[in-house]
Every structure is written in C-alpha cells, then in structure tokens.
View 1 (spheres, rainbow, N blue to C red):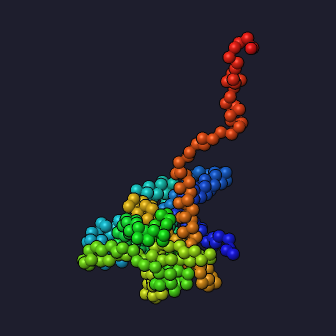
View 2 (view 1 turned 120 degrees about the vertical axis):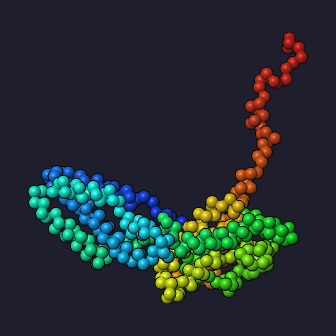
View 3 (view 1 turned 180 degrees about the horizontal axis):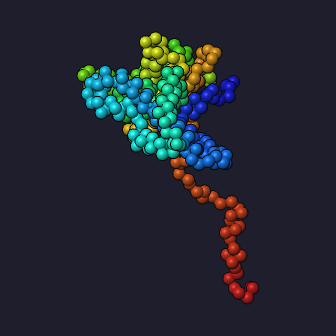
Length: 382
C-alpha cells in the first residue's frame, strides 16, 4: 500500500527570505510624526526648542566630521592603490556629510544663541567630546540588520558574486542547449522521458551547503542512468571544454521510476569550504544567510533570462534534524510529480472542445413545436 503524497517539510517561500521592503522607513516617519506631535503639545517656547534642536543637529554633523577625520588618517596612506592618487576622491569617501547642512546648522545655532555667546566654544567642545567618546566606545557601529541590508541593496554579498558567476560561467551556456539534448535522448528512449515538463535541469540547493559528490551514496533510491549529449566549447583559453549532465532514475514508494537530470549547485561547495576555513572568518550563521541570498539571487537572474525560460527548476531544501535515508529522493520526487501535474493540467486546458452531436429526449421535445407536428392533407377533416 502506498502512503499519502509526501510534502516537503518547508516550502521554499518560507525558507528563502524576500528582499526587505520600506517598512523601516515607514516606521521612521511614524515615529517622527509622534515626536513632533508630543513636542508641540508640550507647550514649550519656540525659541529654546529651536535652539536645542539645532544644537543636536550640529552635534551630529560634528560627529560625522570627526569620524571622517579619523578615516582620513588611514586612507591618506592608500592614496594610489585605493583612490587612484586623487586627494579629492579621498575627501569624498571620508566625509559623506553635506557641507551646506553643516553650515546651515552652525548659522542657525549662532543666530538662536542667547546673550551669553561666550559659551559657544564650550558647547561645541562638549559636542565634539561626546561624539569622540561615542566613536571610542563603538556606539555608532551599525547593527547586524543594517549591515545585511546595506550589503543586499548594494549587491555586495558573497552570494551575489557566486550566483552571477554560476549563471554566466555555466547555466547561461548549458541551459539553452538542454532541451535539444533531452529531445535526442527521448527519441532514442521514448519510454524514459515521457513527461516533457520534467525536461529541465533540476538544481539542488541545500541550505546547509553540504553537497554530496555522488548522489547514489546520498540516497539509495537514486540511481545513475546515463549522461546526456556533451556540449564542447573553447572557453577562457581551454580548448574543447566539456559540459554535460547526468540523467538519474529515482524510485518512488510504489517502485515506479522517475527520470530527470539533477545536480547540485556547485557554488555551495565554496560557501561550505569558507565556513570550515578560519582564514575566511565565515560562521555557520553567515553560511546559512548567504545560501538563502544565493538562491534568491539565482532565481531572480534566471527569471530575467529569456534563453533559460523553462529549462530549469530550483529545489531549495533544509535537511531534517534527524537523519532520513530517503529524504533527498522524496524531495526530488515531489517536484517531479508537481511538474507532471502541471503538464496534465496544460493538456486538459489545451484539449479541443468537441460539442456533443447527440440530443436527449428533453432537447428533442423542446425543439419540436406544435406547428411542426404532422397535419392532415385535407382541411375539412376527412
């Protein structure tokens, strides 16, 4: 007896985080409105309030200026290697503040200062001291969320580079040629690849980055069948570089064989190796986050690639805590069955509708009116 249909433990939509939205910015505007309302309702005099506000603004600008000065002390020694010998580029890199804002805050603070203007120097000195203490104690360091958001927005994560390298250096070459290889194999073996929806490269993306080189050892229900037609190209100085895919047979719980081309996303091996090497300073948490970003980035790249449409299927999964000998085969089978259902649905939708030519007795009785009944030949009733 076969069990009920197996479902993946975690759907990829729950495993892979989406890009961050603008909720943080919305919360910022909301808090700003609340603070302004509370300040207005407090009934404080306008001039002292404006003076305090400009004082805080000026202190923040002084902090940025002092922080840039500290960075300048280091960057001046990398003038040629990092900034192409341009001192102006060094200044722009070290001082992101807007000088008109600093000048405006200074003038506004001086204009709103009370009669005791001799304390101006004291106020500026205290503001500088507070900012330097904050920098020394590391109070201005960005949080982990800020670092993650900045890296994702600027596309500077390790995962972004790996995803683009994997696409440009491999998938963009092999995927457009995959359908032709599948057709050639199907003509020679018509009973093996019967479902065209599965004529794709199934790319395994384990979020643990633990890639097994031999799929047969990873799961005993997965068996190597053969290799598809090779693609030979001269690339990056290597003559006749060979690209090929392996076809596997996967046995389900009813001993039915499903066939597909499947392989791991090889860049995950780099992430795993980095987490094992102390020189990389790459923790397991970093590895998990980068694996998720790799999946999302690769998915976005492939969706925008016209030549790769319908030639791939990404299978992201998180291995269970307890060892399951056939977890991988069930994960792949679920995706194959989903594709089989998709093809069956498409065939039903594309099937031509043939209207029925037979009519039942009710339809016949409705179509025959009283005037159509047989009438006598003579009108006098004889």
